[in-house]
Image 1 (cartoon, rainbow, N blue to C red):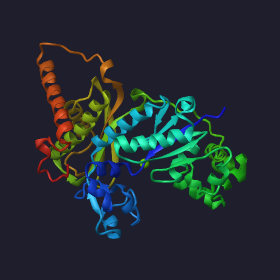
Image 2: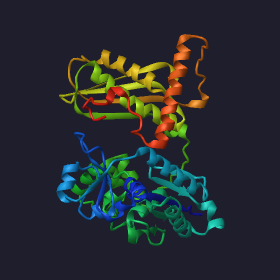
Image 3: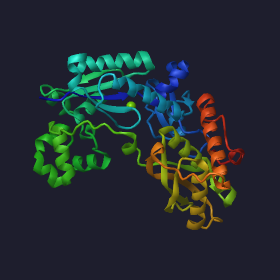
Image 4: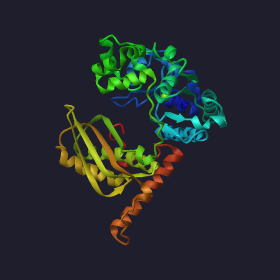
Length: 399
Ligand SMILES: [Mg+2]
C-alpha cells in the first residue's frame, strides 16, 4: 500500500511571524533583514508584497531598496521563530508522531496510519493549514504525495496557503513539465550541467533513463532519476534533538575589522553569548569548542579544542575561544570575521557535571550559571536586546 506523506512549508516564515507581532506589515512591502547598519545586511525573508517587486532572499539591503524604495525593513527575532516552529510542531503531533523537520519552517509528516481518524491526505492537509492559521496566525503550503520528494515538490507548487496533491495518477502531468531545479537537491551546478546536455525538465530526466543520468552525474544522477520518476521511497524519520543538533554555532563579519585583544574579546563574548543561550534553550551542552578566524585577505584558519567538562555557558565558551584565537593568529593583525561553534553536543541532563563543592572554582561556576540563566529569563520576557554585555556597547562592531 502506498504511504501518504505530507510536506508542510510555512510561507515567508520570518516575515509571517513578524507580521503576527506587527500587523501593519501586512499592508506594506516588508523584508526581514540582518541589521541594516552591518556591512552585510541581507534579506532573510520577504512578504508577498515585497516579492512582487522582485525582492529575493539573500540579496543585500541596498539592492532590495533600489527595487522598492518604500520597502519596510524588520529586524529578525530568532527566539520567536524557534517558538513558533515548536508550536506548529505541537499541532503536527496531534495528527502523527512520524515527523521529520527540514529546517526551522518545513517538515515531512507520514500520515498513513492517521487516515482512519482524520480523513485522506488532502483532508488532513487542509485541516492542518486551517488550524495553524487559526491557532498560530501564519499560513502554510502543503504537498501531499506517496513519497517525500513529490510531497516537497507539492508544497512548492502552489503558495501561499494551498494544498497540492501529487498522486500516482497525476504526477506526470504535474511534475514532468517543471524545471529540473524543482527536484530536491538539484542545486545550481547540477542544474547547469544537465541543461548543457539538453536536460531541462523533470520529464527530460525521466526520458533520459537511469543509465544516461548516472553516466552524466554518477550516483547523484541515478538518485535524480529515481526522484523524477517517483521511485524515491525513503521513510519519514523522526529526529530527536540529540541526533538532530550536531553543533551550535554563530559567526559574524563585523561592521569594522577587529583590531587587538579588546575587540576580539568583545566579539567572542557576543558570539559565545548567542551560542550558549541557544544551547540552553535546546537543553544541550557542547564538549568541544571550534573557532574560525578570517583575515582581511579572506584567508580562514580554524581550530577546535576539547573541553574538560561539557558546558552550555558563555563564560566557558568565550574563554576557550579567546585562548584558541591567541594561539591561532597574530592578534595584532586585523580580523574580518569570526565564528564560534559548540560541537560534540550532548543532552544537558545526561551530563554528570563534575561538581566539586566548597571550592572557589565551583562557587564561581555556580554564580556564573545563575547569572546566565537569569539573563535567559529576562530576554525571554523582554527580548534579546534587553541585556547586552558592557564590552559590546559602543564598540562600533555592530554587535
Ligand atoms: Mg518556507
